Length: 167
Length: 394
Image (cartoon, rainbow over all chains, first blue to last red; front, side, top):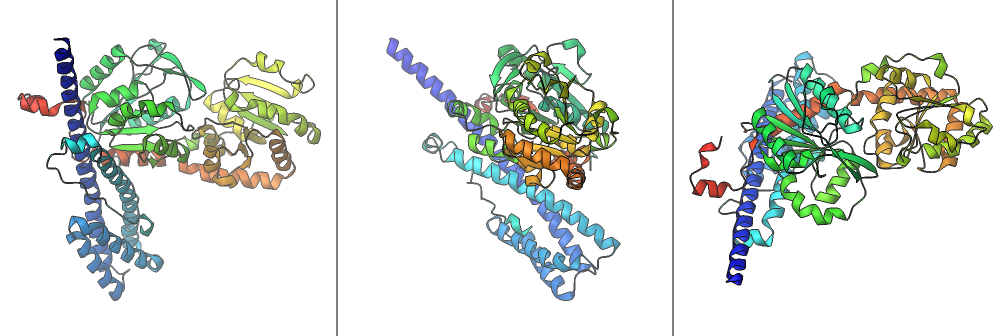
């Protein structure tokens, strides 16, 4: 009788722990989604600004073409290729800003300040997102989460490998 | 910037009435946020519940535990947990900002109890502690709920990555740089003088290193005088000072913010011989903003704050001979001293609240994407869903 009770108690505690862990993972997935939504929004804004810069006087025709192509690519890339495309856009912007800063007029100056403020935010957003993804990966790789399939059907979040040094 | 008005809940882990870096940071941040039109409520332990500012809500009397080389006055336990839950329910916050959530404190309880946008700031810098291995598995589920983590310095950040395997964004502590820039030099503190501010009784503040260095300094600068400001029992310390050197010391007791600004503007050299346990060194930032020439020990926090010696002189920590050498060198070289002070004053502007609060606020904004406020955590959502209790979900 005593052993049955002990086993029953153990099973109950174990079930409680499973449910607790499932909630924990659910929360992490939620964090990945929100941090991605935030990052995605900022990146979309950056692509929009890049297009504006491409149409402005700072950009010569050649770099304008380059920038436009990179911006469209970044906007339309699928999730797996997104970081690659965004790095491409960073590179194009970097090329332009390296020598374009000097002959910018007031309107373009405003555009450039907005871009640099946005870049600061994107850097933080990337850090937050990467952190969320790494925690999720860590938790999902634990034995108990794998054996009991606590992740359910949720896809494994994609690591966003943004080359921060390009920014 | 700062357009949408928010309801923010801030949790302070340490007793509000004990002076300390974390409390000062929370007070300044709260006042800055309130001044920009947000609604802020701070939950904190407090010894004297009647003397609290309007925005602080007491969670009860703290208990003293030894932590990180000092005594921490924190609060936890079932009653405190109930208070935290009540505060979260009644506050209807858009966001919670928890300070030092990795130590047993109100912040950890709040982190455990809340669901929604959570931001955590980590202040402490400590060497790897074994105890973390034991409590790590308990901390992890709570800490990973934070949407964003802020570390006040690189030292605090590496402490965090070492102990909890998670990264953080570095945002320095804030100071009111303009207030310190207003300090006017007072003749009584000028001349060949050394200034020290801090709780000098605590060994980690390093007053002993300065005491040992003084005989050497006095040999080269016979008119040297030392001013020590800060709370504590000066009689005890005086006994340990060589009677011949005693007349050179003056203990000022605790000084007000205005006096502090005048003080750092007056002394020839501001010295911070701390031996460790320091994560950011807010007092150094303030001294720099006030235009002082700073000499500090080369512990990691000070090293990074002073840009490796660019904005203030560094000496090998706990080495009185080195300290004496650096001070004598600076006392003899007026030009070098002025240059250091000028570079430091300019550098200190990046710690101004205008800059720092904007960075913190943009973290707030990012954490709140797609959320509808803070609620109590439901740790077993799946059961609730099963039993059809999801109605109470927001």
